[in-house]
Image (cartoon, rainbow, N blue to C red; front, side):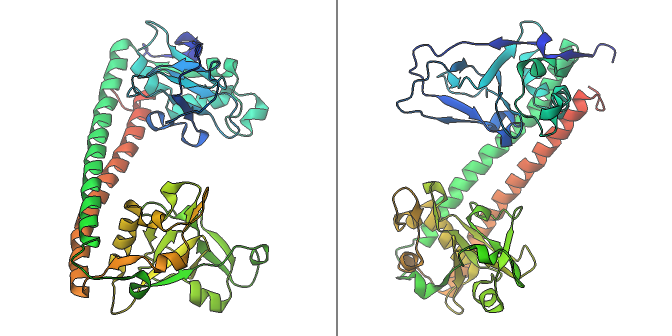
Length: 395
């Protein structure tokens, strides 16, 4: 125990200031404040067209960067070791660091510098004005003054080995999930777009509705009602962490209220990847819950269609860009109800719909189980790393 030391960051890292001299590298990396604690997923790559990047810093896998001018929290991350062979670059708004030779195992520092313990230390080093607003505009001297737990080298290696074993399992499960998701998409396409089945117009299979426009006069009223908007709809899922309210009178609640099994589809977005994104409503919140104009609501027509078939048809229409194909607009694509109603639906008998739903539902359940296991392992990893670093878990 006594061999462990609490050291300042300045003792174990050195700043890197390698400039992108020729200005031709377009592999720009950024890290967002919202995802700054998750090293391996905090970076994304984007190509920069016709922009001089000669003042940018070159970064290599395993180095650490943080954005010194973030306005919300410390946008900090580790350059993923699976970065492509082309070096990345970051803007001069970032400080770049790497482990000092012999001071600490670089792989251990990657773990320690993405831990709650480190961020707690960093918060304690901030000047009072910044501390009141979270990790805001972290200065170099504050970053250097933050501390990390530094065990003997054999213990560092063992911690890296233990966490690495969990990471390997997470990686394997993610690969399994991606493979199964690809199988599900392909099988869904085979079943939903079966050309041996007669095609009907979508309006003959589903009931369509659009929500109401959000206006200032709806901000208050006697019938404040929860409603869903595009921000609540993900790829086959609903994000209900931020559901807003506005006033819907009783007639509007009846007209625009959601029923179990309704499918909501995002009508438009500046990103083509979000156009037509669907999710099914399963009474996750107590009613009434309505929809905003940014969503299309599709409901199975009784005796003609079942809700789960509507969902899988919408998933197919999103995955194979059928929704995007009928979307209008240039910069912001938009699906109108009129265009959606005219889309072709290969509509089998109710009995066959149930068979399709059972098959696709079994694969979906298997996929969800794998993803749930990944989420559980990520929680285990976080607790395990924290326990190893504060020595409540012994190596």
